[in-house]
Length: 196
Image 1: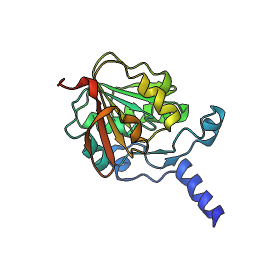
Image 2: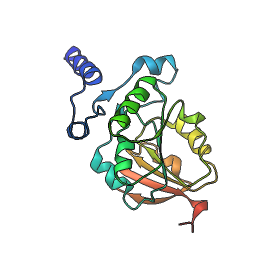
Image 3: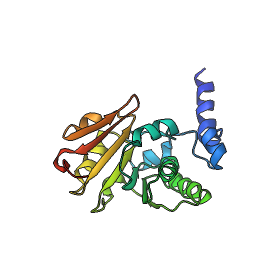
Image 4: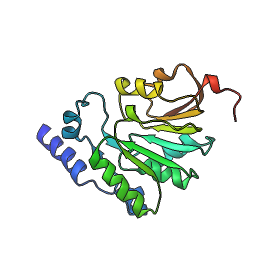
């Protein structure tokens, strides 16, 4: 049985079956990608999560009533959330992905959809946040060891965090919780109260 399970995982990683989103968009954002060699070589195996494309319904619910500021997807994977953000009215898009393989796939997917985004292949901890209001999107891309320094680098500009599958939501205890649902929570820094 374990061997059969491993074969299914390998097939899902290397030859993912297109889901409804991919069939509609002509993209390749479905499947699961663990990228074990990339994670081991970069010494982050325990600190990163497997890639899964976000459920479009979860995404739409999570960003409802969120201002259409600069949308920054940390751990953007194959780019599905960036495509969804574009479709829901976010006009400035940035994706940060540490895996060169997923970064290339995201670039291909966005090109197929004729979507312009700033795609950065690098560690989210090294990303310099812009001095402008931004929505920071997380689909549980990494653990506390990476997430803590990312939060420390948010800067002073307004930040709204949309966190789907919020495994480490407790790290945002110093933020005001805006909304929550079965699959997400959103936060805004308490010091930014009163800004529109």
